[in-house]
Amino acid sequence: MIMQAHFPSRSADMPAMLHAGAAWMTTAPESGNGDIGLPAAPVRHFREGAEICGEGEVADVFFKVVSGVVRTCRFLADGRRQIDAFHVAGDVFGFELGARYSLSAEAVCECGVIAHRRHVMHALAGQDEALSERLLSGVLLNLMRARQHAFLLGRKSASEKVALFLIDWAERCGDRDKVELAMTRQDIADYLGLTIETVSRTFTQFERDGFIELSGIRRIRLNGDAMLRMLNGGCARMSVAA
Amino acid sequence: MIMQAHFPSRSADMPAMLHAGAAWMTTAPESGNGDIGLPAAPVRHFREGAEICGEGEVADVFFKVVSGVVRTCRFLADGRRQIDAFHVAGDVFGFELGARYSLSAEAVCECGVIAHRRHVMHALAGQDEALSERLLSGVLLNLMRARQHAFLLGRKSASEKVALFLIDWAERCGDRDKVELAMTRQDIADYLGLTIETVSRTFTQFERDGFIELSGIRRIRLNGDAMLRMLNGGCARMSVAA
DNA sequence: CGATTTCTTGACATCCGTCAATCTCAGTGG
DNA sequence: CCACTGAGATTGACGGATGTCAAGAAATCG
Image (tube, rainbow over all chains, first blue to last red; front, side):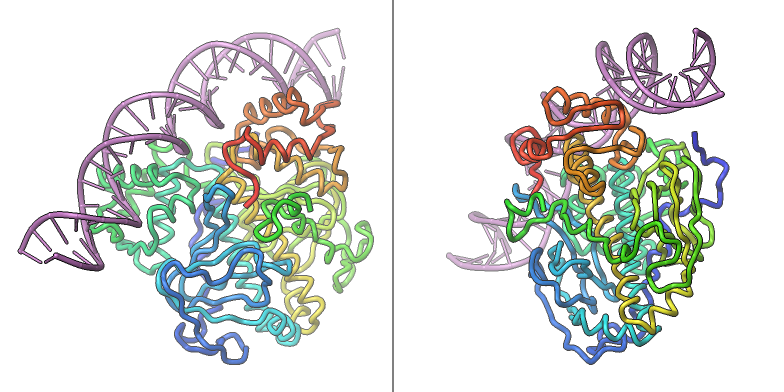
């Protein structure tokens, strides 16, 4: 039925655009005031593993990361976890449609965040086009990433998931070649819908294949181009690009 | 509303709140004007299978469904497809962060949609708090659903996926017991990250187990409660609720 | 009614999850 | 300095859920 070989223009499997969160970074990340036209707010610091907000709590504020890494996630009765997203400096999280958080947020590592009152933001957005635009951009960035994530979870093999995660994370960290993983293997597994064993095995295999080089558990040098070739080429069942 | 009963605090596996798109339905769906404070716009009609917008095209408008069902999706080189979402009357789709659509939209069945100019909407939203709020709600609804979808894709077995899909679709169609599926098995498979064979087998198994009754291929009577018990109970590997 | 598409069913293959053992490494205290 | 400890990571063996391939049934349409 439908076919794609004819659509070179329809690229963008993991579009670089998802890194365009710049609208929220108009001032230095560590500046304590909101940089989005809101009253100054203090930076709240959290230790590794600390809960920033909990699923089910009243969602009267949303957050902006100024330093460190935050994960938003959900838990199942048996203790398993699905990680919705990782957020780094400049990212905004905690947006909700309803009155309560549908996700918990936790510090992946030591981190600082600013809390903004939701109704204040909404009220101001109705009077200020630029602010309204920035607010919308923040939500849209979350939306684009969630879509991308769903796509990855739905149609990718384990090795594709890990490879795309590494490439994506490298870009978000600003360095294409050297990645400092802030999160554990378990975090990665819960983000990719895999088990920790599969993640670990995939890392090992990638190292054997020369796609990555581990120096310490969290520090990785990666050959993104080779990895992308692998993804598009024979190894994986499914091609990466559209 | 369904699962809340069991889980007062950390509930929300497939929250009923996701059906709260009412902000976009303030007037009758078939009314030709935008019902969101925008200049009147004509309803454009599409035949089954027709493309409403294409991945990669300039995203100068977003859409509101007034009748029928729309799917937003993405294609891979080998012709495989991931369906991002189904949209029914009252839903809004086609929001983008960047300048171009990252998803195609197609008519699942005969349907009517209204197109709104993006920059007009943004400009007005900056002057009108209520409108800004409604715009944000539309995007947030998309975000909540995308999160939910990712959760389902990442941590659910095939039977859980199908069951949750049926329950969700029944609610969105307004009837808890009788579902009229607008989409093919292939559509469902591509939405759930499964193959058509697995979807078909799961339907058959559900019928054997008494969870559903098929009258015709697209018309289903379902026992949602029994299905939910099954999901939370022993059959599935993973529990449904948090 | 035939033609075509869509769906169902079966047999088989495989990727990845499960279970369990072992390894690595940082921290701690003797 | 070294042994002990415990959390996180790796590795192996194995099985099961789901994908793949193929045939045929059922629904749809002209």
